[in-house]
Image (cartoon, each protein chain N blue to C red):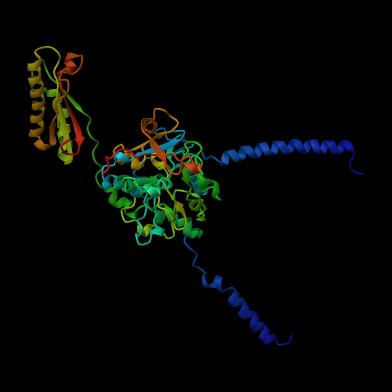
Length: 254
Length: 269
């Protein structure tokens, strides 16, 4: 071979240059995408279930979004009936991103890996990453369930609180002590028998008796709303009618 | 000759049967893959054959009443506020026009100044026969067959602006720039913005109707804007049309607008 030195050297240089993209990136493989579902909304779910199965969502979410878009914009259909029968509002911003409020750690994780740039976010608003609450700080106390209305029943003509009603009132008072913003509405009733004027006084006294119990538990007056019912006689059954309704209202001065 | 007539017919009939069976199998497989379920309207949604609006100008007592409608719309739809020094880049969903610009052809030099300077609230007319829809090359703008709303599908808009040329009411605006930096108020996170290179306009609040709410401008207008089904004789909009003399913008063009105007008495400030 003529000029074998030059040819072989040239070949070696060519091979080195041609294989540079491979040799330079050797061992620097991009990490496998690991989309995170660690968001506040998802952690709140008893069963972590997306609109459809994980496998289906993985392969088909873009087709699904396209179908949703056409149904909502072009046909005015708003609800998607999933294969398990549950209904979902078809909305990227208000349904998908409500749970997946961590776009950077969920959407972008795979999209960047496969180098696709969906143009969703040109118009649709990315949820604030602040909406994403990590599990560690999620331990904030879950507000206790609002206790249902309590009915205190009274004996004929009496307005002293019977012993069996104390437990329900104590639960209401405990809730009010914990929730500063909640207030309580008290309405007194009587049965239909007897003088209406006296009954009105009696209904008022019954409501006042309940108020005293709450005051004793340390609930301030501005959080106790005395509401006179439109009809004081409370229902057909007399035993049921002689009562005071106590219910929780959120926010002061309802 | 390897194949006689009998052999040939046998082969053809068997392959036809196989072919038919094959498509049936393929169809059933396809069905399994496409579990993208049924789509239904929200039961709370308001429905109509043809949505329409009646703007009673006499019920707007002050310029603030008018501005309130505009602000409500622009707030919930993330409409940008563009510098008034660049009027060509303005984005309009609902805005005001003088009498001679709202109803050209009816100008009258002796028209009372009171009417001349009334701030007529104008918006997309959601025409029965919309010229913008006819010219759109991608069907990005289309008339919904269910309720007559002239809609925009931003995903399809290529920004050719034929629709802007076709619309005789100037109801369409083009995003020459990314609108997001110009949205001064806080973004409504429930509604998308638009992007550079698409045309936008009023959509009769289709997203609110779908959830059972009135359009935003009608809701804050204190009854000055009636909204309802033009096809239903008992609807609020028909009541206004039945009891008042109403006009529409440029009816001579044959677009059959769905927005009616009551010019009314002297009450307007």
